[in-house]
Image (cartoon, rainbow, N blue to C red; front, side, top):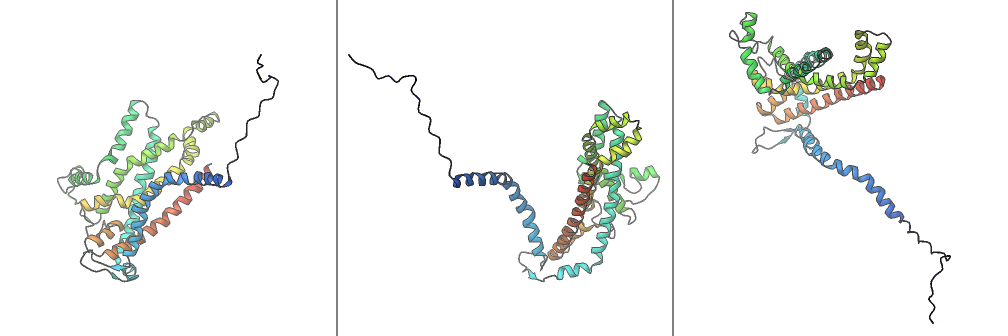
Amino acid sequence: MFVLDIPRATEEVAAPVAAPAPPRRLARFRRAGRLVVPYLYLAPALFLLVVWTYRPLVQAFELSTYSWNLLPTSPMKPVGTANYERLMELPAFWNSLGRTGALIVGMLPFTVLLPVLIALASQRVQGRARTIYQAFIFVPFLVAPVAAAAVWRWLLHPGSGFVDQLLDSERNWVYDVSTAHLVIIGITGWQLLGFSVLVVWAGLAGISGDYHEAARVDGASPAQIRRWITLPLLSPTVMFLVLTTVLLSPILTFPLIDSMTQGGPAQATTNIYYLLWDYAFHSFDAGLSAAAGVLLFAGFGVIAGILVWISEKVAFHDD
C-alpha cells in the first residue's frame, strides 16, 4: 500500500523573493536620461538656429574686420576696426538711422493705434457680417509686397493715377522728396494693419468675460469698462505690437523701396536695411556692409531687450 506525501493546507507557503534593488549607477543613468531627453527634442531646432542664425552672425562679425569687394578672385584684407570707424564718419549712415526712426514712429499708428480702435469697434459686429468684416481687414496682409508696389505705383502715377484724379493734382508722389517716405510708410502700414488687428483680436479673446460682467454689476458704463478693464488687460498685446513694429517694419519696407524708389529720390527712402544692402551689392563693399549689419543687430538687440523688459513689467503689474 502506497502513501502519497501530499502537503497539508495548513503548511506555510514560501514567501516570494524580493527583487534586488537597482544599483546606484543604474539609477544615476536613469536620472541623467530624464535630463537629456528634453534636449534631444530641442536638438533639431537648436541645430537650425546655430546654422542659420548664430553662424552667419559670427561670419558677419568676421567679415566686418576685412576689406573685400565680393569677387572670389580678390583677396580679403584684414583692416581691424577701420570699417566701423569709416561707417561712423559717413553722413549717409546717420541719415539712414534717422529715416529708420521716422519710419518706426510713422508705423505705430498703423500697427498699434488703429488696430486697437478697429478691434474694439468690431466687437459690436455680430454674425456673418463680423466674418466678412474681419476678412476685408486682413486681406491686405496677404498681398505680396512687390504686387502691392506695382498697384500703388499705378494708383499714384502723376496726373493719370487714381489718387491725383481724386485730389485733382499732378503730384509725383513716389519721386517727390517730401512725399516718397510717407508713401512707403502708408503702403507698409496698409499691409500690416490686418496682421495687427488679428493680434489685437487674439488679445481680446484671451480676456475673460467675468471682468466685464462684474463691472456691469457694479454699474460701470461700456466706456469705463474699455478704459479701466479692457485696455489695461490688453497692454501685453500692445507691447508685443510695439516690439514687432520696431523690429520688422524696416525689414518689410525693403521690397517696396527696391521696387518703387530704389532708395531715392536723393536717398529720401533709404533706411538702414536698404543702406547696408546698397553697400554690399551696389558699392561692393562687403566689409562696410557687414559692419553696418553688426551695429544694426546690436542696436536693435538692445531696444528689443528694453521692450521685452517693459512688457514683462506690464504683464506682472496686470496680474
